[in-house]
Image (tube, rainbow, N blue to C red; front, side, top):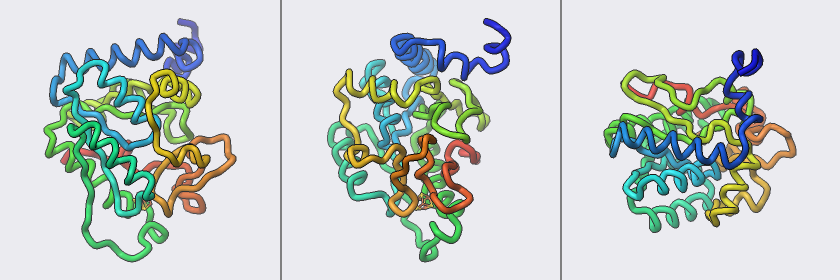
Length: 234
Ligand code: SF4
């Protein structure tokens, strides 16, 4: 490994590995973690393209691997319908949603608080209720400005390993994998969305940044809901 690679091995590998090498690496990461964590390894499925790719990879390792979906009252109807389809196909996917009352227009007034209540809180509950010791995500380091500082295997919360098996994949490689494996996706992608979230906080944009359509017009634009940045264990 040269000096550039030593300084930033993750971004170095993004350009060095071929598509097939990345797929093999992702499968090996999930397989090794599943060997260690067994049924306490659980996939977080956001129903976006990256999540369905990770879900498909995980199912090649074991059909018994479980998953959870965190949804909100503000998800687009297409996402809700896609969620129902996924649950019909995979009953081992559990859904978590926070239905508590929140202030009107909280997403506009205080999106951090809204995401904390509607996304982070039910994610914590999923991890607790499902006895998760290793959660598997579809996070990729080329998605945007907030996603460059991650590793494939992390332990940001003590006792909870986070596996990011497609961290090195580019957007194009995700679509390549989904096409080659005939994996169905949320129909909103056909309309031009590149990153999917709640309806009031997601736009179609022409920006190069994949997550630029998220929280447009707020300080959170292109940012994070909090499940990757906030503590998930008490
Ligand atoms: S994405 Fe928007 S509507 Fe959804 S939880 Fe976050 S702030 Fe609320």
